[in-house]
Structures are given as C-alpha cells and as structure tokens.
Image (cartoon, rainbow, N blue to C red):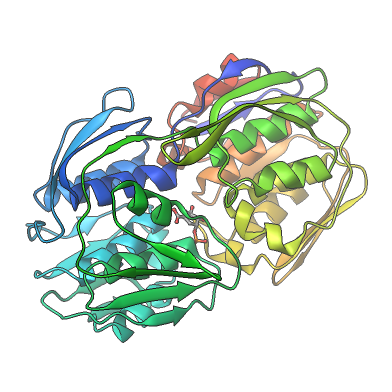
Length: 433
Ligand code: S3P
C-alpha cells in the first residue's frame, strides 16, 4: 500500500488524532493485573496496542472488543494471569515486548514473545540485563527477539541506573518490581515519558519519585479504575509540522496529551518560529491535555537542545521535515537512539530528504539538515510508520508529486491517517501499486 501526494495545499479545520500509544499499551497491561474492572476510553485501535490487547487476552484476561476507543478490562489481579497456549506475537511493537518482558519475568509460567521482521532486529539486551539482575531468566537470539521468559523465578528488588534514556527500559524494570521482593528503584540519564509512574498511581499503586529516583515496593495491589486516554502528541506532531510549513494553514488539534515528558516537539517547533497556541489546558486522569492551534509561520534552523531529544524522540522525523522547510541549518545531535527504532530513523530520513533534494549530512548520533526547495520523488519508508507520515507532510511544500512506498505500517500507530489528513487538506491518495 502506497501513498501518492500532490504537491502544495494547506491544512485547516479541527481534528482529534487517535489515542496515545504509550498510554494505550499501559492501560491494557495495568488494567489486566488490577483487581476489578477498568474502563478505558480513547484507546488507540492501532496494530501495536491491539497486539498488547491480544497478548493479555491470551493470558486469560477478559477484555471487550474496542468500540470507538472504549473497552473494559476485567482485571485478574497481580497473580491472576494464566499461561498462554501459544507464542505471543506482538508484531511491530517494541513497547509491548519490552514492557511485557518485565511483567512476564514475575509470572509463575513460561512464555515466549516474538514479532515481525523489524522487531526481530531490535535490541533487547537493554531489558534482559537489568531483569536478569533481578533474578529473571530470559533467553534471546543474540540479544534480539524472540524472548523466552522462564516462569517461577523469584525476583529481588534492586536499584538500576539506566545507561540509556529509555521509558521502555524504565517501565520494564518497574513492572518486574511489582513482583519482586523489597524495593525496586531506577534513575535515568535524562527524564523520559512517565506514563507508567502516573498510571500506576492512578491504579492506587504507590510510586515514589524523589531526587530523580523512581521507586516502588513489590507485592502491592492495583485497583481497577477509569482511564481517559488523550490524543497522541506523536500523531499530532505530523500535523503540527504540516500546518507550520504550509502557507495559509490554520488547524486545531483537539484533546492532545501534553505531558511535560512528551511535549519536546512543541518547544522545538516554537524555537524554530512555529506559531502553536496551547488552548483549554486541563488535567484528564492525571495527564495534562490541551487543544493545540497551529498556524503557518516562517521557520528557521536551530541546534535542537540535546535535553529535548528524549522528550521528542518519536517526533524527530517530523521535526526534520520542518528543518527541510526552514531558513538555514538545523542540527540534531545526541539522538543515536533513533538508529534502533522501527527503522534506523537517521538513515531513513537522510535517504528520503536526499531523494527530495534536501542537503543533509549524517553523524553517528544525528543529522544536519539545510533548508531548501523540496522536489518531488519516491520515498522508501523502510516499513516505518513515522517515516511514511513525516514525508507525507513534505508534499505540502514540494514542487512535484511524491510517492511514498509501502505505507501499511502506518496502521501500527495511526489507523485512518490518510482519511483524516485528506479531510484537512493534504492531497493524498492511497493505492496498491
Ligand atoms: C515508548 C518509549 C519510547 C518510544 C516508543 C514508546 C513507551 O521508546 O520511542 O515509541 O511507550 O515507553 P524508548 O523508551 O525505547 O526510547
């Protein structure tokens, strides 16, 4: 499935992009091990979150089919999961496998998690190392999935000083910590998204955050609750960029999660000159939410502050499209983590930008992009949803047609992207050849 984009146009109107992917995964995981019923609204019905849902159903949890983002989970309690009959396949989803590795390390049964060709190449040593130190026994294929997790292993709480700024690793250790004796604590080299900590608290599980140390005691209880998941800022980011670069745009993105560990993209785009207004700020279920109004504005190249990198990690491909449309050079550094996402996002973006005539130079930990005239061309997504959607927005400033090959993975995080984007002005058609 390919995207064909006509050049030019502008974005206008008011839309709500689908629910937050990180929170959707966590709502299923924590709702499943809670006691009693959890009602979720705003759930992302994308392939990744649905893979987590299927895995917990396979472990005996009653979860209703999502209906317009609403579902209920009949939690089985911390010790109530059952051995799955089969290998659990979580497709493209790194969040599923890494967080589940922690949670499954504490179960009485053995389990195996696998995924698609992209997931089979992604590094898992980053979770296997700390979980093994807690007493888990996990085998992998040279540090990559499938993961075979041995059950019935007693886990012991410990302190882990994370070597990489990764919310997935932090969350994996904290989820194992629920099953460990004593206290489990982590420190991070830089703050990362804190949805696990916030949501555990929402389920009545005490999590302490003091002086940069996040800790919890094992063996407590989670109590079923209601969770209202806001729109995903990572999906909103494509539109923040699109409306910024396309002259005459005026677009409102409704009910977007603006958790301060996720909103780096807003600060980065504003530093580039973007006109983004935060309206109706409110707290929804312990998470800050706002409507974002974005109008086109001339952008300038900047050095992206390194401390913003973990706070905008999934939005950096879209930011590089903004950089291509900015006056001068944008420098991204300290972003080596981009090389181990759904694709090597530094390489994928560099290749695509070059295809469109945008001069760039690649470093091991980043890229420099010189703003210029975007031509037409053919873009390879490398099976990466965020590469496909980022380059879709480049068409708004292109001089000719853009074809984006192989966009089927867009459904992992943003089902309905093509229709929603067309509805606000992107001239996009989907075709199979
Ligand atoms: C996620 C954390 C990030 C992010 C991913 C979702 C999460 O990964 O890229 O899309 O839900 O915890 P890392 O923690 O590996 O940086």
